[in-house]
Image (cartoon, rainbow over all chains, first blue to last red; front, side, top):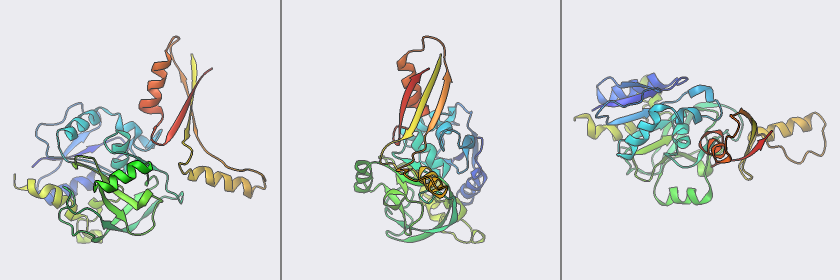
Length: 223
Length: 76
C-alpha cells in the first residue's frame, strides 16, 4: 500500500493530507514534489492537496496543472491509479483536463471557511463505498474559487453517469446543481472542494471524512 | 514582437467580480452602467515571426481556460 501526496509551491494542506493517509493506511505517506518528473514505482493512490499552488497565478490550479509531475499523474490516472484532488487539488484536476468543468469565484465573492453538510449522491464509487447512499455528512470547506461550472450537457452527463459523488446539502458557493465533488468517466479520479482530510479524528470536530479514505484505501491497506 | 492577449469570461458565465465592480460604480453615482465584466490582459514579447498557430496554442494550453473563457489575440 503506497499512498502519495504531491506538494506544489503554495500547497498548504499537504501535511494534513499525508496525516490522513497515514491514519488510514498505517504507513507514512510518500511525499512528492511538483518538479518531480517521475513517480515512484507501484503507487496505489495519489492525492493532490489544497492550498494556493503558484499563488493562484493566472487561474487557481492553472500553473500546477502544467507542472512536470502532473504529466505523470495524468499517466497514472490513465492506468487506473486512484487520484484524489481536494480543493486546490480539484482545481488542478479540472485545469489539467482530468475532470470536466471549472471552478469559478464563489458566487457571493467571499472566501468561505466553515463546515458544511454534504449529501452522498453516489455510494458505489471507489471513494464513497463506505458511506450510506443519501447520507448527510459534515465536512469543512475553505475556498474562494469553489463555484463549480460546466455547460448543461456536461452537467447532465455527470448526473446521468452517477459521477456526482457529493452535493452541497445547503446553499454554499453558487456551484451548478450544488455539485461538491465529481468523478472522471472511469471512476478513479475524484475532485472535490470540501476537505475530508480535515475530518479524520474526533479532535478535528468530526470524523465524516474518514470513510472516504477508508473506501479508497481500505481494500488496498492490507496489500 | 509585442502581442496582447485579452481573456474574458464567456457570455453566460457568472462574473461575481464584475458584478461587485458594477455595484461599486453605482455606489459612486455613475448612472447608466448596464453591465461590467472583468477580464485579463496578458502582454507577450515574442520572437519576430512567431506564427499565429503558436500564439493560438499558447492561449489554448495555458493563457485561457476555454471551458469558461474566450480569448482574443492582438499584435501590437
